[in-house]
Length: 147
Image (cartoon, rainbow, N blue to C red; front, side, top):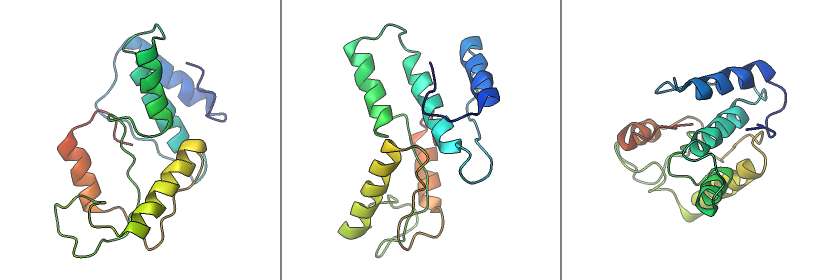
């Protein structure tokens, strides 16, 4: 686990390596800090490392799982970020289900850019805040790696 995509952050990398090697992984980890310090990059690499734990041997199946993390498409990986309000969106709706095709394409493009560069700042037009439906969706899914 080289964590090559994370610039600097040696102390945090070492702390997370110790967490993984000790097997004392908490139910949640908060990555907090100033703009551009690498919180997202570190969280994504941490998710990658946790998904690599299943088997240390690099089988084809394991490599596919890691590729899904790299593409931000792994089922255990949830990125939560500001989204625009969709037309007729109600409480409890899927956070992206009511978005227009243009809005959805914008979100997909931002995720593609984030997958290429974990330091990319996701900016979706008319998205001013994190939707409560996004948070509820993470809680409902109960996934171990909400980012």
